[in-house]
Length: 127
Length: 296
Image 1 (cartoon, each protein chain N blue to C red):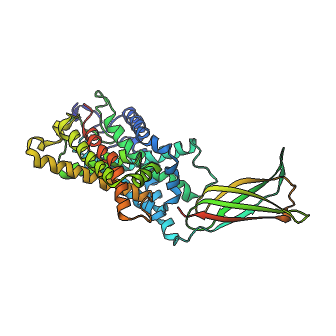
Image 2: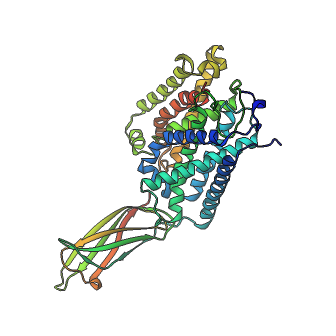
Image 3: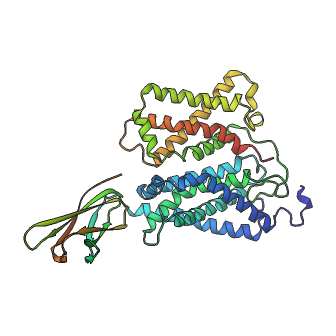
C-alpha cells in the first residue's frame, strides 16, 4: 500500500472530514432505522394572550409528532364570547417538518379569556 | 517541478494547502450558491425521508471520489490518497454549508437534528463537488502548480479518456449544472405545459447541443479529451448519445431525489427529465470539458 503524505493542516482537515462524513452517514442510517414513515401528526397549543396596540395576540404553536412533513397546515382558533357569539382567527404554516414545531400569532378584537379559546388544525398537505 | 527537489518529499507546505483550501471554498460557493439561495432546496432537506437523504449523500460521495480519480490531474495518486481527498472535500463542503445556512437563517438551534442534518446534506454534496472542482481547476499555473488537494505530483500527463472517465466526468458536469435548476417549480410547470412535440424538440435540441460542444465548437480541451474525434460519424454519434444518456440519467436522479416523480405518470416523469435534461446535457458536454481540462 502506498503511503499517504500530508502536512499537519491536511491531516486535521481530513480528520474533521472523516468525523463529519461518518457522523452524517451514521445519523441518517440511525434516523432511517427509527421511523416507519407514519403520516404527519399535528397538534396545536395556545399561549397566554397579550395586549397589542389594536388587538389581543395569542401565540400559536403547532407540533408535528409524525414521521412525515406537513405542508400548508391551516390552523383555526375560536374564541367563545360571554354573549354566546364567536370570534374566529386563522393562520397558515407553510411547512411543519417531522419532529419539529412552528410558532405564530393569531389576533382577536375581543379580550380572550384563555378557557374560552380553542385551536385546531383543519387541514394540511403531504408534500 | 521535480519531486526530488522538495526537502519534505511529497508533502506540501501548510501555506500551499491553505491557498488550495481557499480556492476550493471559492469553487464550492461558485457552484452551490444558487442552491443555497433557493427555498425548494431547504425544503428538500426536511421533506426527504432519511433513506433517500442517505442515498443522495452516498451517491454524491461516490461521485466526488470518482471525480478526483478521473479529473486528469491526479492520475498517479493512489486510491487511498483519492479517498482521503474525498473525505477532506466532503468535510469542507459540510462545514461550508453549515456556515452559509446559519448565516442565511435557515438552520437554528431550535430545529430538530433531522431538519438541520437534512438541509446540510442537500447543500453539502454540491458544495463538496464544487470544492473539488475549484481546488483542481481554479488555480493558476505557478508555484502552486494547480494541483488538487493532497496530490503532490509535479507534471501533468495525458488525461484519461476511457469510457469510465467519460461517464464519471459527464455525470459530475450534468449534476453540477442540472442541480441548480432541478429543485425549482419551473421544471414541473414547463413539463406540465409543454406539448409532446415541444418535449421532443427539447430532446433533439439537447442532442444537438452535445454534438456541437463536443465536436464542432472547438471547445477548450475538446481536441485532447475526445480522441475519436476524427473516427467518423458513428463514433461521434455514439459519443453524443452516451453523453445525452448520462445527462438524462443524472436529471432523473436529481428529480427523483427532490420528490418530483411522486404520483406522476411515466410520460409526465419523462417530460420533466427531458426538460431538465437540457441543463444536464450542457453540463455533461461543456461542463465536463471544463472540469477535465487542466488549468495550464
